[in-house]
Length: 567
Image (tube, rainbow, N blue to C red; front, side):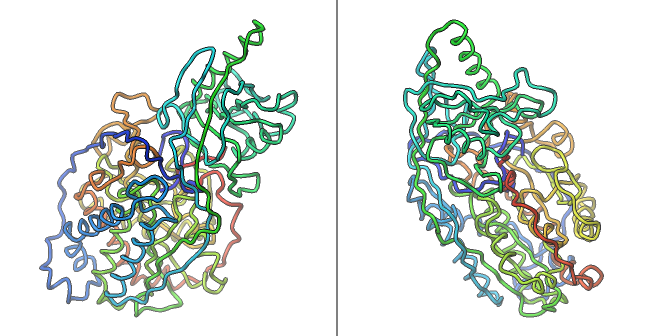
């Protein structure tokens, strides 16, 4: 799942990879929830599953077994353990690192053994990894060391600004208005009178974060602190993708920090008081050390069924890359889901060709699915009639999310993107298959937008899509607790059970095997299998898959993988 904004809900969008620094472990407890029992089909004998043609839900679902799924999860964890990050030494399956390539090779080997036609697609991206724990501190008038991941997050940038005075940019709106209205730092005029060498304090809002940083750097700033705007839903510590006005990722050569509205308000107040009293301005230290390797190789694993109409293709995808470290919840879980389903369908001769894809770089801004879609001709795209996306399927403190193009975004709770009715109406077919399964097992669900998932890229080019997710390990509202049980989890960071989660914190390294629930993984994989096997034999939607391909909009600059907000 991709996005990093305030700590409210996936996929899943970062623009460049942040790999945690190996200078300390801030362990956070895993969220916990009791998985309610629900009726499921009886397990089929293992030999029967290996030999029979699992071409209906009644045959396939009993063959989706916890042991098989969990063995894949253990294999991914072992790969991460055997391939520590060259940047920080922690177990890793991050794109651009040996653990990701080993994960891709593992999937490719098993899919080849299962009889699929396997290719590995290579594309390039700019690799970024922290090599030391980032530092933000106030030297004076009040000495304070800000705790990374709790009080602030580093932007993907490099540089050092030590003993630098703080100066706010223009356009800051204090007190904030009920809705977003600040455009602080969005124009060069916001830095009129800015003294070179100072750290710029900028309020969120109005333009991409990278634009603010570019303007600050042009004015001679030695560093940038961006604080949340302060409107409802925009108060917590945030983290943001640094992209320019066109949505292109940038890596500034000055350090960039993201923090909460409360901390920004405090610093802004200190500055105003110093000016009024003609005393010394606040003095800060800000340092971010990282590796940047442009044009690094990354990989998509693509496996086609032997049978099926090549003019009617169902893409079944999950992203294989981690966000920070082992990435077992996000998204070894979804990768294991589709891998097990593919293996259990190895004897099926589907009506529509099945194309299983494990995408790289999802956490960096949907890079793998973008590279894949961009590699296709218009004719190739027109033959893809559907996409099914599995993005996080084993959250212990879970929700049950079903992707719907008209639903609210996972982060933010608003509808940020709309699609042609032809895309929307067809997307509801698999959506309703999943809902029907959950209804049959007595489980609730909620509808969520594909924004931040690889499914979004397919919708963007006119291809219907749906999918499933169980949410991240940080964010669960009371409404969701009422629907699914479990416990509250870091909505606006103001509840006693707040642990910050493992998935979106670059310096905790705790998204390991223990951060997953095998029972949740099993019932979500069964639900996803119902969608895959039914769409494999669909005639109505797939026979109409001569899709008119829509031009992509500007990059999802702000969303960068459902963990990041650009504005």
